[in-house]
Image (cartoon, rainbow, N blue to C red; front, side, top):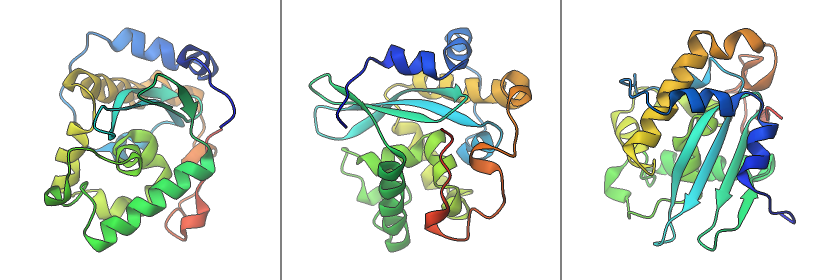
Length: 200
């Protein structure tokens, strides 16, 4: 990407997402451990992913938003927003690994401690939206549920994410979005990998 912008710019563009997370900073409610359930209730998600010293990635922050944006912060401090095409490609590549039994999301023995960008993206609620066509492979996969917890930078970040999406699901964002738009406007997500819809 040619441009590098501050995360605050994306937060402003993300609508009410910043207000949601501000209100949830101190909330540590227990999660129901189901990214796909949470994702199906809101239109978009704002996600900040950070590159770690070992070259892997981790989810720093995540909350509901009017549209989906994923920002990657590199080790050198630069930031870039992933394009729809890049996210589609990363998730499709991770889906192949899941099918082959080589993804750390479903096979803990494959974990190297430095998760790739595709693995981290699919651990996020935004990834659950974009990768809804493989939801049946992960929906009740206990390894996935446990692994996605570890793919957040801190337990607090994981808890805040779940709390904010629960709030949105129960009415915080639901009333301001329509299910006819965004990712879940149809129920034909499983037809092909090329049927991704980007909530932008």
